[in-house]
Every structure is written in C-alpha cells, then in structure tokens.
Image (cartoon, rainbow over all chains, first blue to last red; front, side):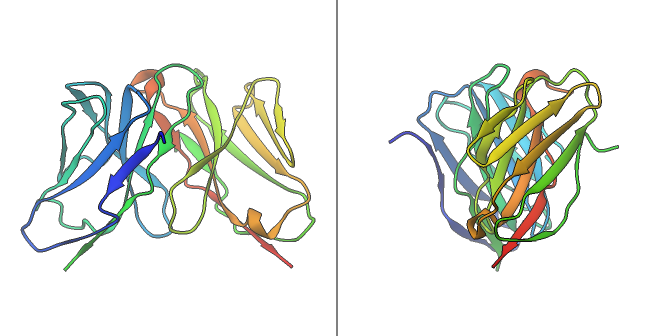
Length: 113
Length: 112
C-alpha cells in the first residue's frame, strides 16, 4: 500500500530535549517537505528537499534540523532551541514537475511536558 | 502582500446551497494550482487540480483566471460532509516549481 508514514502520532518533549519526527514514503517521490500547523492557522514550511543529500530552509527553519540520506526518508529534529514546539507537524512528498500535487502523511502532534 | 490569499470565512450555508470560494495569488509565473480539503485535526487532502480551461469533478468546479490571478472553487448541492477548511495552493516564486504555497484556508460549515 503506497503512502507516507509519519511516526509517532503523538510525542511529548521535555524542556531542553531534542526530539525526532519520522517521515517515510514509498511513492518514489523526489521532493519532501515538513510543515508546522498551529491551531486555527495555516501551514508554515519548515524545510524541504528536492533530492537526496540536499535540503533548503523554509519560512520557519530556526530551531529545527533535517537530513535526507535516503530518498524514502526525511526525518525532522525539533531541537531545544525551538522554544515553542507545540504544534501539528505534517510531512509531504511529491513528484517534481509542473502540475504535481503534494501528498501528506497523517501528522505528528508534539506537545511540551 | 501574501503570496496566496483566501477569505478565512467561515461560510455558514444550509444543505443544498451553492457556495463559492475565491483565492488570489501574487506570482504571475505560477503554473500549478490546486484545491485541498482539510478536516479538523487531520492532514490536508487533495480535492482537485485546477486547469486553465476550468474543470469539474461531480459537485465541484474549479476555475482559473490568469489575467486577474485568482482561482475559484464552486460547490453545488452542499452536503453536511462538505464541512471542512478548503486550502488554495499555488506553486511558489522562490525555489522554482517544487515549492507549493498554501493559503491559510476558508472554513465552510454546512448545516441541516
């Protein structure tokens, strides 16, 4: 069954702790994305990657880091420098090219303990 | 000016009504346009792509006006299950065609 898998579904972070959110896709998509969504707000782009071993900062990259060592995987680390990490995190992927839509995982909800 | 702008709503309509949403975008070079639907506390899901000639999928019709740089979504015969937030999406000015810009969404509430 093809798709995008995010884990865990819920995550709790202690003060000063780094946490990593997993995103795996088996759609053979080149591009992958991480978004943050706060309650009642739109999506904000954190990082995106168009090919393996390459990624670019989005609009709100501070306090986050990513890696893209494999085409299928694009993990997001929320570092202790991110002072307000409580949000809904969404991973997406797409084929590159005009007219290609994004497909989303079902998200991870991160909260501070 | 935001790259993609939508009326946040909410639009409150009775079942069976016809409702239309508009969305404006700032980059005249954009070539990819979509409408997504997002239910409360869920991920966005693709509703339909928007093509230059306009396109229809059942009760949903999408239109693109390149000259005025806006996109519309028309929903006919609204159902209770249409209640959701509708996101307008356009490919962005920076990062080339691989970066999609999401509007903040328009909320629709369909009541009996």
